[in-house]
Length: 240
Image (cartoon, rainbow, N blue to C red; front, side, top):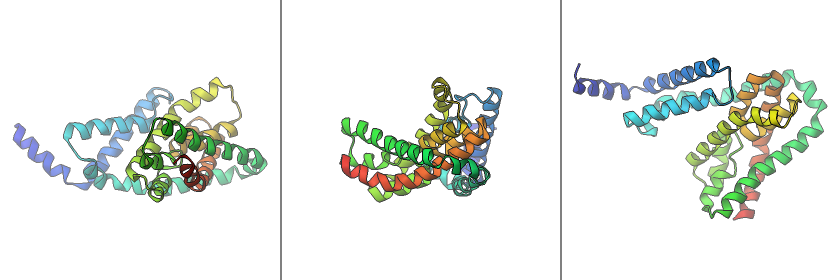
């Protein structure tokens, strides 16, 4: 089969919605196998691996992101049910959550204020434009919430999604080694801190490490999304 034939076949396949859904699932499967082979090491995050693989494929094929998303949007749709499903382990750990209500509240406020404040302070010091600040403020909230907040604040939703995803991936990679270095052994504290700082991707990593940590990470992710929606407009107005 010569090159023109391959080009025609690719042109046909690229128009099929299932192509990019299949590519997304395949990339994640490959990245997950790599993560398993690496003993679930923090650096071998399957989401990060899948993003890299898909980026290479899209670049090599010259496929615009809009065309890719049109085929893979079912995965985006499933983010909602996946986040809601995190309530199950949280409900199972409700007794531990009630027992730690005061420390959880204090950690939530500290983590949310630090996440928003430090990002805006550093970006403002470098003269970042207001529309970028608006996309940066909700970076520690889960992506769907971050997109909604950024839109209300006048920021670019796409940039907000990229920043939220980047924050989650970095948090998922560095959380375990950092918390180990700090000798933090309470799984509730480890999980909650990871969920507040790194939302869904951090929560997924916390579940890989410990079930209690995963439940508290889900709690931190949900509460921080709510508090970020409240604090981000005030913080942005302050730095503007």
